[in-house]
Amino acid sequence: MIDFKKFGVDFMISPQELAANEIKMLLNQASFNDTVEFEKGLFNIMGTTLEYKSPILDLTVKEAKEKFPSVDFITIAIKRVGVSQTIIPRGDTVYNFKDQVYFSVPKDSIEKLYPIIGQKQINIKNVMILGGSSIGFKTARNLCKENFTVKIIEKDKDKALDIADKLSNALVINGDGRNIELLEEENIREMDAFIAVTGNSETNIMSCLVAKSKGVKKTIALVENMDYMNISQTIGIDTLINKKLLAASSIFKHIRKGEVVALANLHNIDAEIFEFEVKEKSKVTKKPIKELRFPREAVFGGIIRDGVALMSFGDFQIEAGDKAIVFCLPEAISSVEELFKS
Image (cartoon, rainbow, N blue to C red; front, side, top):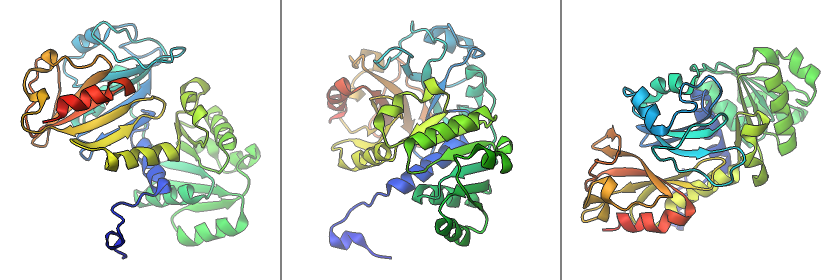
């Protein structure tokens, strides 16, 4: 194993590995279309689109909390169809049909969140991957290790043979995944998830739409064009991923200065989720949250104290040594960072 630090390289990032890991995480929480973990899953940001059967539909954020007092969750963001600006919800914000809603949830409350969004937990077992690219190979490798049943469709014969040689637990089919007859022959209707990671964004999108029409529960498409990232919830694909966005998020984790210990991006929102380590004499330790004059364009998603996930409502007092999760629109980043300086 080469020690790259000897050559002055502190961190190495593989966009393909990041994408493969992202796909695996999305399949493990398949009822949600966006997932971010903090502190190895102690706190989680879960995104989903509200359908007509969601019990919180037409309720305000405050009413939803009152209706489900036993569930720990904070609504940190809403992306609304036809509205360009991301909504930072307040107590009187109403949940609308087709809202893309992001919740901050401790690990123990994830299962309790399903009834709130009106969905059941989807168990993914059978997965079809279109494209034997580096991402396709790495995804299949990861899923095979966790005992998923994996089929890969790759049109290049040599590449298909190479993948079959390396992945004995996956079934590799040499064929064109754009051929609907081939998908039918390979029992696409029996698949729980369909992942399209060819080098062509349009092929990935169209094949996922075909898979969805055949009853596949979960579809994930890799896209290169950033303009596509905002349309996943309107065209019927569960999740679009972009490896450049994943790489940028990973890079920012290492170049942010000060108290930021982790940073993540949501797929179709121009905002960031920070994890701050609270220092002695930091301004956020001086008063309860409701008295901090926190920017309206930001919201606390939770606090981790001594390895325990805590909900961060108005009366909560942040202490030195805490780790604070904050969702933040671009215009509020500098103000938020200032509050965490010691």
